[in-house]
Length: 211
Length: 170
Image (cartoon, rainbow over all chains, first blue to last red; front, side, top):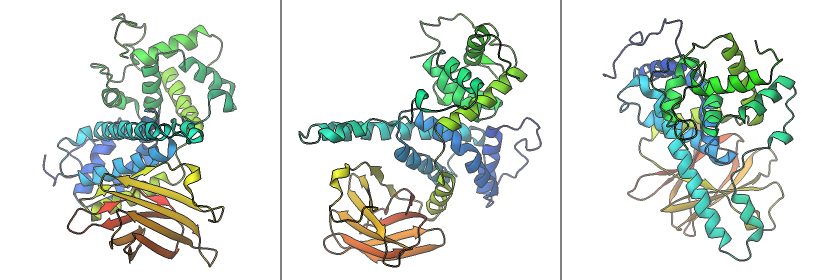
């Protein structure tokens, strides 16, 4: 792969262009001195990175830093990423590893602090903040609530995958699953196991129309 | 926990091999909204990321400091109530930043402290501007009036890789 590849070597005009394709194009254009596509990618993919990091149990402040440093790392490694098609996966894996590191640091820190006898008040503060619980959040639409509670009935890993899939494009299913360490084989844009499970739960609950 | 292991066995879930249809799209679309509603991406994160990328393009080699939680009690008494302290650390260096309102009431005053102490060049980088100062022998430095907004600190170590902080909102 040469850094001088021109736009067009990735299927730009493809109607099925996914987030992963746009990420590849952004990398190639950036190598070529054009940063517009990368800026758009940051806007589009930051929510996906944010929720990937948060799913690892990272508090909001630390997650903010992890997402930024993931994007900064992309710029630093822009010439060493051999396979542009794998940029989306690279971003997700980089974010996830940095999230684990942040969680490890927080735990070490918490352990050090709880060893201090007078520090009782702080011991709870180091627990990852996972945001308000389901009961604290008012989901204003009944269907949102049904969907949210149905989601909690599928396995934890499926919940994570479905949340992230929902934030990307369906053809990115495979990249996201791989980054989460959930190989899905040649799943392509098929419904897949997790979504099929969610559908079964929702179908059992009956009546509500989803389309 | 592997979704393909014991609990699920290798049994397939009915419908998993079917192509995505309008139902799937509708449910995923709704799910995206609910996910975003429950844990919204912080305001300005995209802008902070873009600025961090600009900085990364300028300094290829840096050590990144990590923000750490400092117990509330560690904020020195006598500071104005709205003062905010942020601490960043790395194996070789800790930088503590205290933010308060500047005398003009609009800008932000930044009081910083670097450990281990020593005279070091400190840069405060914001989109479009860079302010520079030097930490004194005790590791203290001050930027008296800084525009509120995204900023990252960079500390130059003699003969070493510069150290930077994540982009924070002043």
